[in-house]
Length: 495
Image (cartoon, rainbow, N blue to C red; front, side, top):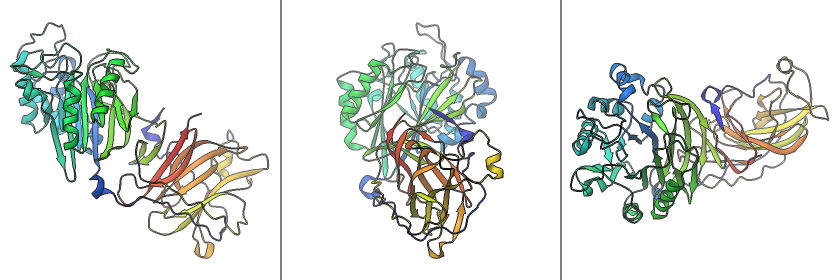
């Protein structure tokens, strides 16, 4: 499921603050795990995209307006510690000599726009890398490395092409191996070419690299072209790679997006589709940007952005909604693969709640300023307001004539900080995080949880993240180890 970028914080749960101070006391502190940065190394942020082709119909724009190609997505690429792409066009002025009609060669100067957009590493193995012959492979490597980027999977001979590339930063290291699995690549041997996947030597290379790096990414170009479902052969290669120690299988070559899955704590992406190409058709002008948070234990979380390039420039379209455990982080939902403990103490019932029927309550630093505040969900007799009159399509009261509300209060003196006049989605359960809350939603007349979500404190009221459909348990955890607990939803069960 997807949601629009412009909806990240558009819908808020604010209405008029209506009531006086309501509560006496309650306690529930999120139990965040101790700092594990020394034990597990620093967290590294990785961005991976699929096929990039800078020749043919892309070449005129790459020459005339290179800044426009990735302008809408550049901020996501640049914020990564490691950002990789599969380059499907040789960067060379040599003639196309391959036995195919697809002349994808591009100007070597086009390498600079990749560097300026924030990419750091280029995967070379694919069925077009050698279209201009062995010297064309060397030209591509020279052009990419001349602008400060790293390459992986190509070289002057087999040994050179088979070498891993390791990128290191403060407290982290990322190792990459890259292979072609199309069966039609220019194979490195005694001359220049690219590395190819072998069911024996591929896993051996991964197993040898795995103990020496914190995070291991395997780039594979192959699979059935235009297949929108998981490619069986690529899935087998992915399974073998993960079993040998890979943390991410980075697949491309099908020219369309295939489903992304988690296997044994690793991310399996058999095809991220076309990130920038000149093919036509909606499925071929869409790509997936995979962003991964990881440390020395492997993947912590990942998110997927859908991109579109029908007009030959890459544009952000949507973030995918997670289907399992999730964390609200950096302005979007991430699929949570592994996180710190999220044990939440059960809140004590409020001793004196005179202004409605209490549904759920918890306390913590919801305002993000260290103050200990109480957040309570409750219902009280419905009273029509200007806000509710603007939405006659919404059911505002349950069968008992009550509307749903949420309030924030100071424990000392029971002073009201903020109270929502009415909320569109009743809050069935909540956990107070740092500057935010994680919530579960029911309906006015059914106590079963139908959705979960995250609300961020804005200073006076909340801005809400897109709701996640289905049941789940709200909690908090410091997933990115920045010292603040983020909204987390576990035990997800889709409707």
